[in-house]
Length: 244
Length: 244
Image (cartoon, rainbow over all chains, first blue to last red; front, side, top):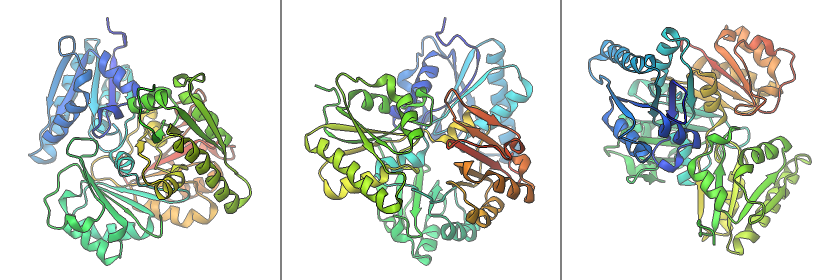
């Protein structure tokens, strides 16, 4: 018998990279769950998740449920994948298992867990659900860089992947917020650097990639990023408007 | 000898309340540090921090450095307090100790650690510093409430304590962002509820206080908050603009 002993769904934030950033509760749930459900889509995300939690798992006792997620085929394929993931998890829940889904960062701050959660709540309303919060990539990046994000009465904005059509909104956010975090900056970095130059914020920005992993890298001078091919796990922090 | 064995300053995020939300690294550092430095100002924050980390500490072996922080007397008194806190910590660092400062939530997302860090970096540049990121109150609140904060391409804004003079900026943020988190909502809750009504966002908001503690409470219908005296550890999440 598992010491966890309670069937149900566990959405477990595992942080962005360093296994020591798992919470005590996350480690406990991952060790004791009957089933580890790992949606696989973004290959980078799945292998990174496994690198973080691998040492805790017991491949002999625990069942591994690898659930494919379509990254091509548009919205319809994505919805079909989400439905298939739900069905895989629901079958394990129906069998009375404790099913843990390890999720990079925090389960409810971006990421895919919301879709699974909504389906389980709607269709299996009696299944107990526990969500374990996780360390987010941007707080971990700040910790590793030793740079405050926001202090006192400062305001923080977090923007997911920025595309060219978002640049007007980006300008506006950079003007209004003390600190702006840009996630997945790989999509459009040169255009973002142009906006920083235009607003005289280039010196107020810093960059991090693969935070907490062996490949972790920082760029305190973001001009070095111009023209570079950046990874998926990349972020930029702009601490402007006179904030220290 | 401590197994940590490395003198230096450790800024340790301890999360917002539940001791199980400490990271593995935070627990390790707090157990093994020579000195636990606890700035005391906001009484609520100091006692909450101790409630989270108390079980890990060894009052026989570890030295407790309680550092008073002036909460009255304005900016000048605050600066004097920060200087006194630095001096207390610097003396322990000069004696070659591993000094851990446990901090609610994350050390660099609001909170006071940035001031100490800046002083140590400037005046003791050879002292090693490690910052351990922590779970933030708003991701923990979302986890406990089971409600996603942001998904896909949504944008997130985090605002610290809102006062009456901030209401115009609040309106603007609520219109432009998918999700807005308002921290320390106790200062001005009725005025914020008026703004939500005006923008037809009352039904899109939820409230949490004392997340992860015995006194934890949620209000899925924020109209119940009107006229109530709310605690310091209170937050409101508004998930509007058609976000689920």
